[in-house]
Image (cartoon, rainbow, N blue to C red; front, side, top):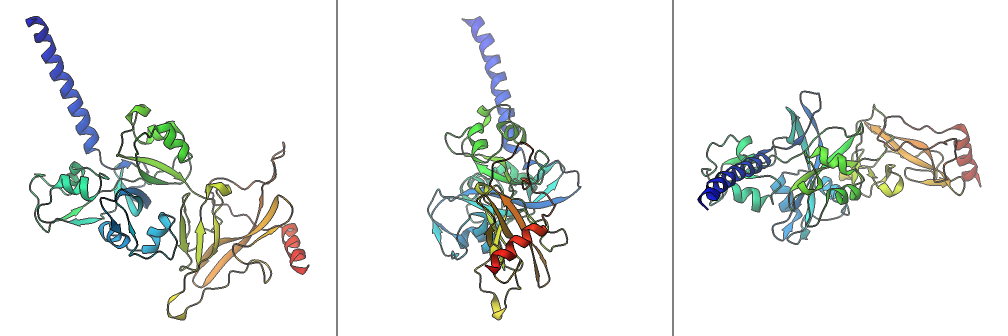
Length: 362
């Protein structure tokens, strides 16, 4: 019995030490992997935020320093007319848009949000209760160079390092989304939900297996983006819109939506926003008086031409006619629209333009 105890306790101590080291390493890991070769890279990212209580949009914008209400509405695919006084119940999960900064192989939010310490605040309370475990208290401690986590001052300004990345994935531009793992989630299930692969998820998050997916933690999920026709001389190039969101561009005159159900082709139309001081939007005509941005003409049962958004400069909005097909692919290939976020722009052909003109003259 004595011999058994002599062996057991050292082994138990060793195991506890190993798990303690592993847990600490996980807790203190900062941000997502960002291996972009550029010395400093910024991009737009998203992260889930579980509301700790009933909260208004205005309170969320203030906490995360999101300066544009419409960018928040677009990230959550909420109606553009939604007021910032709109409230959501406790435990509701909403996406927070923010600028990502990559440096030294790690991506975190670009020096925001900044949180002001209140009386009785502690780092653990701020991380767990205020920011719902998007970050851990050692991460806040690290970026703010706090030597003693138990010694923070009322009114002290703390940078909250939201996790993010600007890396391409499998050679494609993506938007990295900090997804909060729900109870019962698996790596394969999350991959299926967001149109990626389990192996990609495991690699991005440094996991060995699906067993490493832990409830109520944030993991890096790459959101595919829609094909854009925007020209590289446009003021909003590159226009990167991830699936399930929309964006406003061309000085709020154009609204572009990304929907994977539509073959990941960016759909743009005139926005419904009333511009200030009686301003008006430039012409968005494509071909003919009745063929404007977002309009579609069906050339046959499964072929159609769309007036697509191609960017803007100053007071000019560019459009182009794109030809899309839902016909079954022929063995020899066919004229399929590329599925990635390529920079090549489809141009209207003589035949396509002729079909449109004939349609309008009927």
